[in-house]
Structure formats: structure tokens, C-alpha cells
Length: 125
Image (cartoon, rainbow, N blue to C red; front, side, top):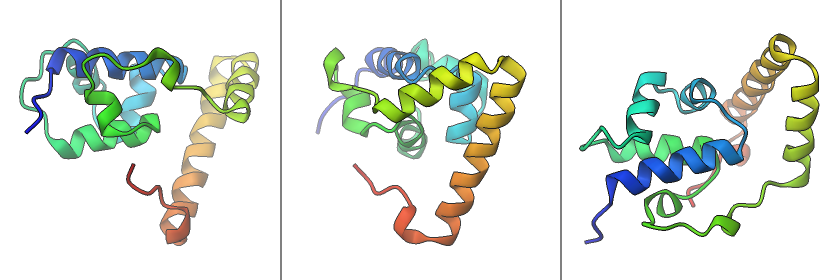
């Protein structure tokens, strides 16, 4: 059985979160977890977090659990898709409040699509 280095997991989560241009609050919302929980995991303060929560975080970051649990993940392994990069750039230009409102709308729309069409639900990695 592979031992997971809690500190590495937290570092990897923070790295992938930054690469996705997400705040801890945004990641918490996407993963349906508290901001405090995300912060504590990133700092390596939670010793016995559940596999379900790790999966929620991995899905929110669009990475595999293996990528989060690797002791040293490959920095070049994560390459944001050009449309996501462009969307993030455009949202950043909209200003914080407008960008947040649009992001919330996109998230609700995606969740609605996922709930009504199993074909669009994210498969396990």
C-alpha cells in the first residue's frame, strides 16, 4: 500500500490551485468543502483526511488523485487547455465582482448539465 505524504498532498493541491488561477474560496466552492478545510489541507495540518474529500478536490482541480498524492509531481504535467486559459484571462479583465458572478453562473450551468446528462459527468481518472 502506497503511503501518502500529507505535506506533499497539500503542496500539490496549492500548486494545482494556483495553476488553475483559483483562490482557496473558489476551490472550496468547487469541491463543496469549507475554505478553512482547504487551507488546512494545503498547510498539511489535516492528518486523516478522507479519500472522498481528496477525490472532491482532485475533481475540482481536474487532476487525478495520483497527481495530488505524488511526492513530487511533474511541474510540466499540468498544462491548462487554451480555452480555459483564455476564459481565465477574460474573467480577470472583467473586474473582480463581475468575474465572480460570471464564474458562479458558469459553475451552476455546468452542474446543471452534469445533473441532467450522465454523459457529461466527469469520469474518474
